[in-house]
Length: 502
Image (cartoon, rainbow, N blue to C red; front, top):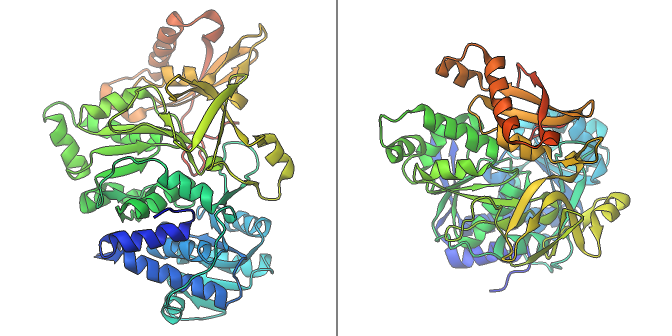
């Protein structure tokens, strides 16, 4: 069956995977299973609700952590030929209301963890006609109950969906500047999720870890998971990650580099008294074999490090504007140092050192931001803002971000990420930002204080200077770090766990 839109994927999954477990999650101390057929039925009920309320074709916001209700609401909205707008549940209520107004939201489905947003939206967003609580047991104070709606509107639902029509608006978190509403079509998302066969077997167990309002989780965990027949276990909190890994015993987890680095530190802290595969089994439940890394660049040393524990890291690369995956390493073709091979639906080229990509997953544009859209897209090519190259086999290598490039007085161009990756290999360096300061290069470092204590390091500044000196010894003059700042607190990060550069 050819899939062109998200409704095709939901129907395909129910037809081919039927009574297998699609979603597994905890409700208090109970583990609940939902099959692919149940997911189709419940999402169709949401589609019928959307049409009955007169919201077909309108914009509906979905706010909350990863839950079964969130997922079925998303497919219910999009598969009614309407537009779903996932909103970051970690934002302040005022910021969320601004996004609701910017995205022309007329209906909102929210998790009770953000009941404050429902109250704020009533006052700040007069265009919103319906507000639906995912957890409320019954309608109250003008707020509809998700469970009641799903029960009321059970039944088959069909409508015509143009694969190239707007499906979802995703606001980028970004590390600088104002967030942009990335417009993605059904084809953008469906092609990105289905074009690459990663040979993941039906029944593969994965665990969600990333925020579901981010397209990496939405496309790879949720949409691709449905298509290939994975059992997706829902992690209810990052605080419970270790416990949930033990409970659900996943085969695969999607992670961002910050989490990978943290987990690796814990593995190493176990020492050499036990075999490494036994340490991994104790930490990850015994089944974890694959970690997919995305969201930021991962130092290749971690790929080699995890391999010693019997776990393969597949590093990929993407951005929200490309739905999101641009390239990916594979189990049988994992080129360490690259961020993978271009997806079959994507082509790339380099213009003045910057990677440009083109293909069926490239966004429609930014919502109501024509100037920013024109700046990002040229003749169908998306300007990624990343510096790098594509080799003759289609593998992508990144060297830094164009906007972060340091241009010194002598005309030399320096990519701060390359220096950060080198110095960041040291155990004592937990986080690092490299910038230009007074026409020389400065490194600001948040040390790994736990490691310093464990290793008996009492003079942290002196030890960091040794690390900087070791780097400088092998670096050309113009790339040497001349000054250093030491932080006592972590850098501020966005919800993708990327450091916000000032």
